[in-house]
Amino acid sequence: MRIVTSVRGMQRLARRWRRGGPRVALVPTMGYLHAGHLSLVKLARRKAGRNGRVVVSIYVNPAQFGPGEDFARYPRDLARDKKHCRAAGVDVLFVPPDREMYPDSQNEAFSTFVVEHRLSRGLEGASRPAHFKGVTTVVAKLFNIILPDLAVFGAKDFQQAAVIQQMVRDLNIPVKITVAPIVREADGLALSSRNAYLSPAERRQAVVLRQAIQLAQKKVAASRRFLPASRLRGELIRFIQRQPAARVDYVEFFDPKNLEPVRQVARGVQMALAVFLGKTRLIDNARL
Ligand code: AMP
View 1: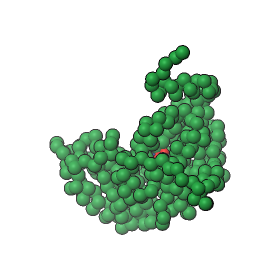
View 2: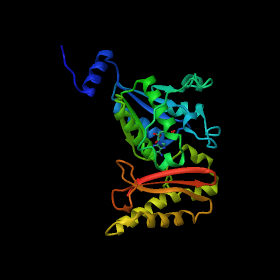
View 3: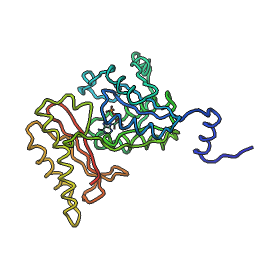
View 4: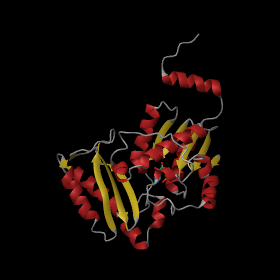
């Protein structure tokens, strides 16, 4: 008889018994794929290994959109996404309709949610109150449906990756999480499906998110000591709002590990911002 005391050891054993098959890597997305998504697919392929399988899921998850947000008009183009995935060597494209993901939601029989209570409070969670509850629930469902060994998320959604990592740790979900770097346009704008909403003028002004990060990085590099977060925030908001289409939702400086806001900004602090360009809300982040 074998005695197992560690969760990781027990899971490893359980998995070995269950299968000796290929490693499965999952890339969860909401579709309208761009080079940022495809960089995740490439990393998933590498991490899954030679005989591994890569699954991309496309699901515009209603549960993570708030009332008045862009769920209904979120860009969708499955034909194009299929082509991208085929060309990228994806093994399985999982595209469930709502009735598959939430069969009981019509009669309110769907009543179990996964909620992370610490890392999801601030930043996106403060601006979009039910957002992360929708994200953690759907990602937990995808993990249970696809049973991946690993999953790849993008640093573009820095807080989301942190919340998922926390969920996986807290609930002992046997999925290894990898976070891939942000892919940007030549002018620095982070690739996003929502960039498709931008008018030509808004698109030109959207580079201000990246410029604000670079300005903060420059100020941090030039300062010998700490910079007060409130002062730096004020300067960046003024800088961003010089663009006529831009309206700042938040500019935050925080500890990249626990996402707690800092009062003094120095090298190593994480910065994140959300800015409306017209009606389109864009986010970006970087280590300072
Ligand atoms: P979405 O389809 O927007 O839900 O994004 C699906 C995944 O792709 C998430 O893990 C995102 O963080 C990631 N992602 C989106 N845009 C980028 C980007 N520009 N660079 C890297 N990863 C990205």
